Image (cartoon, helix red, strand yellow):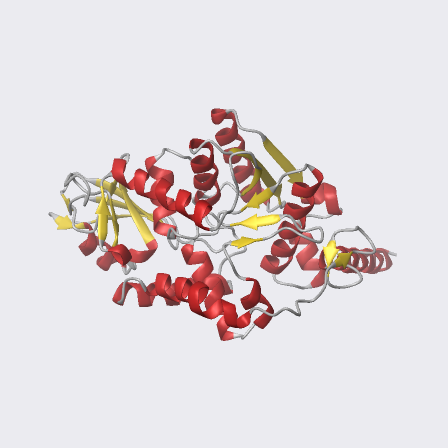
Length: 311
Length: 65
């Protein structure tokens, strides 16, 4: 297989574009795709302070690397979820990445901020770990970005993530999520602007970028992710993609161009400040405060039962 | 050739002779859309021919976070 730009030996093939690139021209293609996403969606400019949510995985570190190379003011935020060795290693890799580039990295530790780590919170309320993890991360991203005065929060969601989320939202007709699913969401009512500059590139492309740039990222999957819904949707989409290249692209970009406007409603539920913490919510108390309160109440009951059993 | 696989668990396979990457992925039952294939510090496309002395890694590109 040959690079479509220089006819040299190809390193990466991108079947949905009927293209292949050598290492040098793939990196150029990747950066161009990110630049195009930022410009077309008016995500941020050179003067904006960008906070990149980094997990130590390929997508978020590839994103941070590209933004720094493109000259943006991009700092990192790592949320330590407290998932044993997995969290320790992913934090170490993120710190090594930041130090090598002289980039600023903020670390938020869930156990310090909420009294328990994510696995304990999830266990206490008997919810899947991914649900408690998602709620806690979204809350921490927004609160940290706001408190530290960043203009925009960038996440490493790629085309595969967005297509899988869209498939899930369509299968369950989650109208509110369908109305909000977009590469760029504006700021307002206590929410910082949220952007996904990797939405034009697939997951194989972000992995390829990370390897070609020599980024040492967390290859192992989160131990809690096995069997989660998003992986199931990705598997289904990749089965289709193998037979029909471009399926994921057609699904997601078709939705953005033709589907999403039909789900947008002027009657979006109004946001207000949470009675407990002041963060934006559509309820009286935000989902994170409710999660933490329920978890701590359950943990207290467990401790009381254990103490009674010892007596 | 030696093939390091990371999914579903870390394991090393050996295959005889000269074969293209796509053949190896088929033997492993891996969808090429879900992995990248690495030899040293280079990435390989599916048509790349592998020899008896090659050592490659089939690395998952799909994550569920």
